[in-house]
Length: 539
Image (cartoon, rainbow, N blue to C red; front, side, top):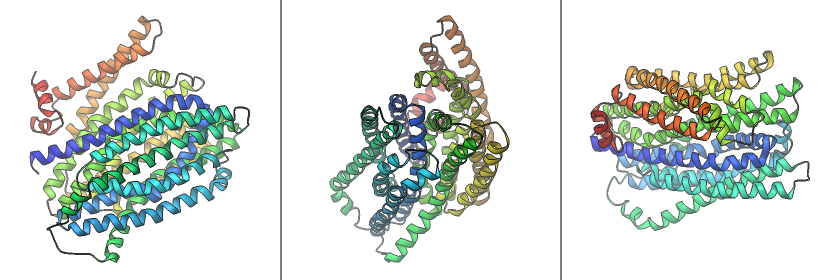
């Protein structure tokens, strides 16, 4: 793989990663006032509804961007341009059918799910999310088509637009409905339903963006059909390829989502059987799903974006027999992810309390719990990032079933472990934390072992894991000392010490990573702004 190809891979991945971070930041910003509007009980209803919605999305659409991008990239590598467009059109048909099924599940099954989860008022937000599942299914095909061409910019722009609309509508609708039904016993349910309206309108905005973009690009798309192979696959062949690509990705992602919603289900029912009130259970679930999970997911967004950008390139490399090129991409992408994920986990662990205090100022009752969850469970960042990227690597190398098997093994262990911790111990929500760490750890360990076996790849343990770990530990200790000293000196102020500690952490970690030579000069030059970083490393 040439230096320019590597740099292009990192640039495209960085574009999508930056968009992912921006959308997560927007998500944090709007979730703060919305969390305060919903309250602990409203957040509990909202988070459980989204857990169910995510399962429906996984079954209908989460797999489509990855599957379509993989198949489109392979056809482009083989110069089968007509088949590339046939994959796009046939995938749209698949998306309409799958999206309609997800809509029916959420709309007509809302009352049943409300009873199953023992969460009064759950049906309202589920019915708002029902049409969203259909829209996102179709949207996924458009995103996968452009990603398959190696262009992550349309997906990045659409994600930012989607999240901005989501933020504005969610806050406005949640506030309006909470005021309208302030005297009702169902006020938390109505507020949660308002919060989900932003998701619907955000997804619709993104879909309209892609439709408009595709209409503007129709002449270029037609020109792109000229030349290349004259091979035209039969409809049955294309649908079979889509099905055989989508299903393993669906199964792999569904297992992740099932794990989350089974946790919610077991936690609600077991805690209720132990005498905890519905309000307390809902509040604790809100803390776990809103404060802990949201913060952990922010750095994982980088791995998700890199996985999306890596899948088409690895698929193209393997389909054309360029094994060494594929292995080079694996090494670069995993190292880049770990250099981000490991310090993120360390930062959340040591600065969890001030971060929660700043982001959720009105949610004070369970603040110490949220900080403790962050401290004990932040390592999940590393394992989720690693499991995400290694799953994408295996899928890109056409070993589609392998990560599914690994996820299934981990899920079985996870369910048994969580049930035992909740039923036979008094750990409560900390039992969920243990499961949230062990689940991705088992998946990534199995995935990494299989990557070595099926691709011949050799992990650079020292530069990829050990050195970033040492640098992160030093960074974590020093940033905590800086925060603690300033916190005392400024009479308990949180904002200034936190900002100073975060800034110091970035500088300290960046300096250590460069001085410990985690990246060679050649690798640095392949990164975005790599020339400037290389100059800093020589200083």
